[in-house]
Length: 103
Image (cartoon, rainbow, N blue to C red):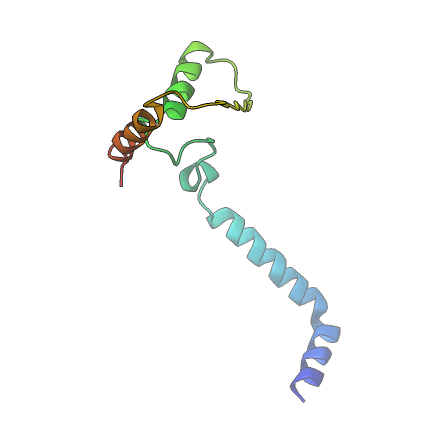
């Protein structure tokens, strides 16, 4: 019964329904805040300011203020045999950097 009524309504009043959806879209578009206020377009914006990626991004922006292009670089480092004591030194570095995270 309800589906028959909905079908009848859509068949008879489809221009009004379409205008209603268009009006809803327009009102939503005008009421929405600017994108820059609600989203961060930067690649590393979610990271703390003390991490090397953020520091490098700031230095790059200061050095090349006109260059707005983004690029990605992948570095792959491999060590055949770990140097003596290197692993302990690496773990110490990680522990120290974990303590500097912002919460």
